[in-house]
Amino acid sequence: MPSADTLSQEKLRSIEQAATEAATSPPSTEPAFLEARQSADETMKRVREKCERVGASVESLSATVQRSGTTIRYEGAMSEAAAKELFGLPAAPTAEQERQQALMLQLRQLRNRFVHLQTETPPQTLAFRELLARVISQPVLPDWMRPVLKEDQRGQSDVALDEMFDRIDPMLSSGKYSEVDAILTAMPVEGPSLTLMMGLLSITRPAAQHLPSRQRFFDRVYRLCRAMRRDADSLLGGLR
Amino acid sequence: MDRAYLSTELSPTNLRIVGVGVYGNAKHIGMLCRGPADKRLRFIHLAFHGDLRLEDDASKCFLWVEAKLEDEPASVAAAQARRVYRRYAAGGVPYGFSPYTGYFGPQGDIRWTAPGNGLTCATFVLAVFDSAGVRLVTGDDWPTPDDRPEDKQFQKEMVELVRTRSRATAAHIRGMRADVGQVRFRVLEVAGAVAADSYPATFATAEVLGAQLQRLVNSGSVP
Image (cartoon, rainbow over all chains, first blue to last red; front, side, top):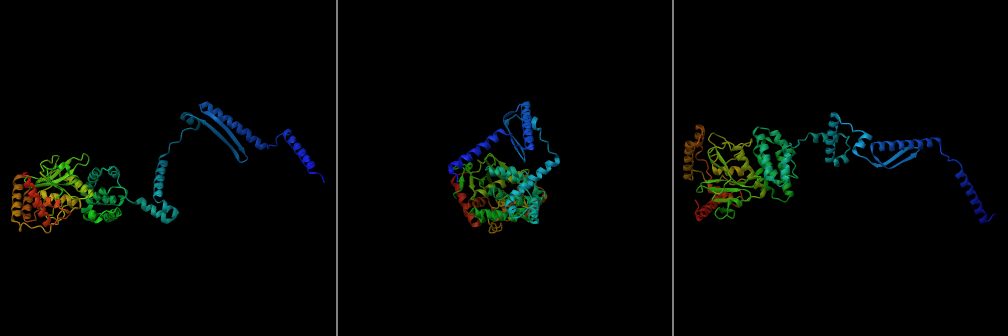
């Protein structure tokens, strides 16, 4: 039986021999891998030259060559002009692309509004599509209401009321009840002041019989008043 | 009566949101409110047949009363006063004795059910508050001119004034004559109703408060 010391010395000798062979023999790189490395070197050289030509600095440039492919990493800084020179200008969107982008934006906004429904109901289901179609077809506030709501939000309810009255008065006098009704449908009750909502109820009261959505708007304001612990009957009783 | 003041004691510029001003030997009344942006005091009143006015100077209102309303309905009443003025400033409000049955039609117009219908300075105030959903007076318990012959006399005199001092049409004058005998809301009764603690004020309340306002006016020795 050889001793433990003898075995160790034998092992050490074999390790030394293997290390010597490894150091003196050429690297056992496969030809394909070698080509990839040379190709990466070429690519990096071209990148460096191109950067220098357009005045872009090169802080670091490296390549990772793997069997699955080569990755070039560049770190540096360049001006906008240099970037345009290197990568070109982005193509201007066509009218059709713009239209599609606008539609996508609208769709995203709608989806955000109904995100809870979206998570519960896959978009491809008929129910969701119907809901979406209903939302899209719902009346929206006219553009002129935006500054009205803004004034109201700024605490200028009197200015907002006068502006709203000046818009709605001609609609009523020319019998455009459906337009006024659409406002009553689209008007949010959380956000605008109670003064503005009471103003809307007051100016539409004489035409209530022509405005099918008014009762629902009244009910929404009424519930809000109660939620605010205000005397809804006293405040709104005369505007029913 | 904690919201009624003689101007000599407290200027109407102290008005908070909306109220009424009285002048002309307590024979005339109008709306007091503020401009939307500059917040300056405005006096909006039906001066005569087809003569709706907005005045920046409210100093001639020797008596004024702040309406007892929460901020929101008060602001809406003020905005309605301004709206009615903007819409009818061009001479669209006739003088007359329309019954107290809702003054505005579905198209936001002052509702005339018959030729000769119109408003007095006092019913103009009732109409503006009514448009904001504030019914100032009960109305149905008011005495008729049959109960108060002086009211009928007043109405007859006004028909003559409109006939002789305005461009009212003959049809309008005929209509006004036909309306003589409608309930009359006197100036200080309407001011008394505004001074009431709750709306709508009954005739009994408005009459008592109106009498108190008259005494206030007399005590102040104002015209």
